[in-house]
Image (cartoon, rainbow, N blue to C red; front, side, top):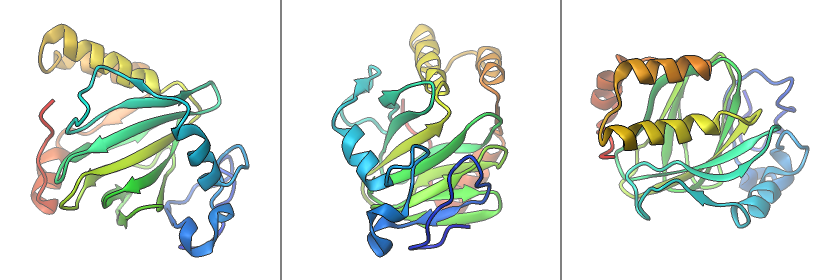
Length: 204
């Protein structure tokens, strides 16, 4: 597990989970898959790439592309206070890093619940069940680094399904979509997470 101020090993070889805070050890202590300091990486890309997928300016839960490539993707998740960002789910193909831009975000990674604030990074390796939510009284924003790229298309297709249905898409279509992207999502975890952490589901 990467603790505050420790250097995170390269993603290709790291299979733990944890938080790293660049402010405690210098921006060069948290590395992206490219080997660039994570702080520099975020500064470089959050200004350049932005594709709003039809969400409002202040969505309760947003999926906004910042950068897309075969090697990695960056997706922005703005969240209203007290919102469940995602129920327990497991990626079979991707590793993820969540960089907290502002607000307070909590994540369950395996059996561990992690609290992260601005400039904290939460590591969520493939094959490990995880969930995340905005546990604070104010809005939160995270940048999600997904390695390799490709999973960002899941959000596009999910948005398209919702728009076609003018509401929650048919469950069978959602299941087919999850299967294609190697995603195992546990909807039964929703009431437990909401009750345990005083959350609600976003109004989409």
